[in-house]
Structures are given as structure tokens and as C-alpha cells.
Amino acid sequence: MVKPQNYQAKVAEHIELNKKYHSLRLELVEPHQLEFTAGQYISVAIGLPVQAGGGDPASAGQVRRAYSIVSNPATNHAVDLLVDIEPAGKGSTYMKNLKPGDAVEFMAPLGIFTVAAEPKLLFVATGSGIAPFKSMLFDLLADKKDTREMWLLWGLRKVEEMFWEEKWRQINKYYANFHYRLMISKPPGMWPLVSGHVVKELNDVVLNQDWGVYLCGNQEMIAEVEQMVQNKGVLTTRIHKEKYA
Amino acid sequence: MPKYKVKILKDKCIGAASCVGIAPGVYQLDDKNIAYVVKEDGDTPENILLGAQSCPTNAIEIYDAETNEKIWPKD
Image (cartoon, one colour):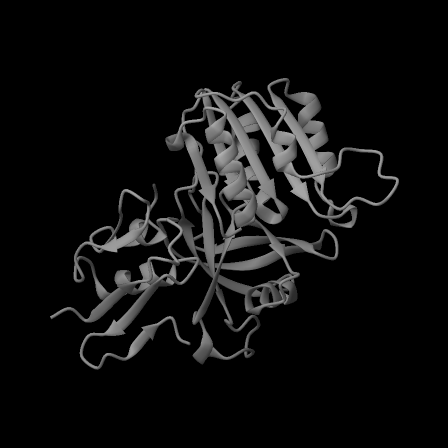
């Protein structure tokens, strides 16, 4: 793994995906390239002056928030992030207010939540927990042409929170070894597609000791799925978790 | 004498290992993937502080060894 260091970057793009999720691209300034492994995260210094002459330098770096890198390692001049702005805390408010051109400082690359050499891969996410899996799956499928069987189960609460749906559908169609299910836990009355929880969906997936399981999202889901996959024969050493996303 | 005293809040640690990546001579993970201090002065003071600052759950507290003042995280 590459030794972490501090990076200066500028916001290149800020997209409101919906009322809950925003996507940001940070273009690296110094150093101008970042080597990382898919699944790693960055630690953003919250409270830095975002514009020349603005902000409070005394508070610089006093608060940090972790965000998984969404982009794949092949893009080494920038990092894409997914931000859930709903908590409206220090981190999400800071990220929500960033505009193109604003300066951002972060430490990277961090973390050990990366894909191992298991023969088959299952990824289970809730909400913004999808972030590291987008990096991992695009890296595996598009860049490394990995042909292992891969499943992605992603749970969102409401239809209004959906994003990247078309992206995953296209990948699902293009790569025969990739299978994808989106679950909406609180669908509207006449919702025609699959609804329910990712945990329920897992009942139908046949697992054994060949599988590596990757979990990212809320702690309840992680605890429940971890127990479930262990009961299905997945080895403890092949269950990988990232709880903070 | 080490510049900093390091305290790990084990119940907050999620085993992300960012501290280990920055200062492996100070921080390591045990068999339950929880951080512990190997040697309080096992790296430069700058790296010890960076390792704590990189933690996504603020599970590492840094104190000035002389004054006992809390350096990180600032409450």
C-alpha cells in the first residue's frame, strides 16, 4: 500500500444527484497524482478556508471526515466522492457548500477495505455504502477484465433517493459475470420493481466458502448480513466490512 | 521522552487501519482488528499526529506528554 500524504485539490465538479446524495470531483493540485487501491478512502480536512481570504485558518484541519473514493484507480489525477448530505453535520454541510474552484485539503490513500483473491465476490451496500464498490467494480470489470462471478446488492430507502441506476443496468447487461439488484425498502404503493431489504434478497443467493463478501453501509445491515453469510458457509476471513460510509 | 501520549479508544476503533498506514511503528491492529500502540515514540511526532487525524472515527487521542493538554481531537 502507498504511504498516505496530504493533498491539495480543487473542486472540479459538484453534482446534486438528488436531495440526499451529491457527487463531487476533486482535481488534484499538489501532488498532482494519487496512487490508490480501489476501496480506499480519503480524510478531508473540514473547515479549511475554501476561497482565498475566506474561512478561519485557526480551525483548519481540526475536524476531518472520511469519504470513500468512488473513481477507479486508473483515474489518478482526480478523485470522485459521494456525499450523503442529509446528516447536515459539519462534514456534510461543508461538502454540500463546496463549489467548483474551491480549495480542499485531504489525506490519502487510507484504509484496507480492498478486494482479495476470493474465487467469487458478493458486494452488499446500503445508501452511500455503494461508493467504494463503484471503484472496486469498475476497476475489476472495466480495467482489469476480471471474469470472476460478482454480485452487487444495493439497498436504498426511497425511490427519490435512486441514482446511478442506469450505470449499473448497463454494466449488468454488458458483463455476463456481473449481477446487480437494487432494493428499495420503502417503495411507493404501486412500485413495479423489486422492493424489500438487501438482507431478504440474500436468502436467494447460494453462498459457500468460495465467496468473498464485502459489506459497506449501516451497522445493522452489516451485523445481520455477516451472521447470515456465516450461516451459509462463508469463511470469517472472507468477510470484509467498512462501517463508516 | 516522547512528545505525545497516545490513547486508543478501542470501542470506537473500526479497524480501518489508516493509522497503521501512516505510522506503523506506533500503531498496529490486534487479532480482532482493533488498533493498539506498539511504541509511543515509534515514529516522528508529525506522523503520530497524522495517524490519529486520519482515523475516520476519532478513535485515537493525542496528548502533550509534558502538559497533558489534549492535542487531538479538539473537542
